[in-house]
Image 1 (cartoon, rainbow, N blue to C red):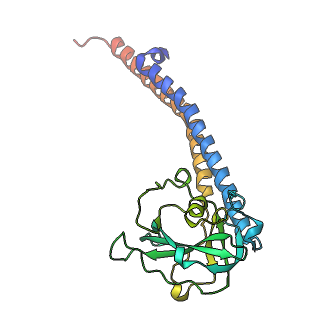
Image 2 (tube, one colour):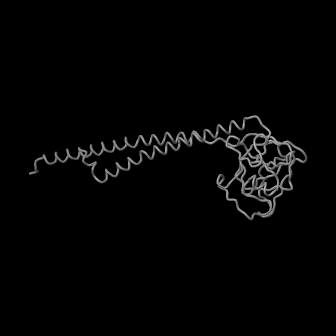
Length: 264
């Protein structure tokens, strides 16, 4: 009854089924890892955002690489904005996906060290892409700022190409080492996304809090792939039983036709 399983068609179908099962199991394991990574990331972000603000000097220093646990931690700093050496970061979008600039302003601390402050987003509405845009001024004099600590941007981490030869005071990436060379000063590792004080007239548009990644979706995909893996052998069994039943019925029909007396 099951000799058909050795035919070319059914051997190929069996081999494909055997390959599909481990493939789907591996895809489920990959989705499990993505779920765990996203859940851990969401937990780190939540803890950082709700942690008590600390002076920035307690977390970073010149040459320091901001870690995953330090990222998004709220820090404070007291000093003065150095608008004369302000730069803009090209090709950045706001919450409405409009393309513009991020405003990066050096913030000089009492000891002369510099903290890079991303003051937020402004539209690219200047006369040309080569012209330095008009930027609302930050508070003058000594001021205390607060923001989320961020690691230096790199092409490898962000996917943004660090284009050289840009117009004066325009950059592609926020990188403390590059800014230290440009300014000729000691610059604290990383930078902050300013959250306070609020800018006058709500511009620059401050960067919103990082959202949660959809970890439950990966969990659902994990279950889905494993159900598919379990369904492959069941589906193969159903097909085999259906084919065997069809062949048996055909054989019975053939016997019945052979047993009928010839018409006179």
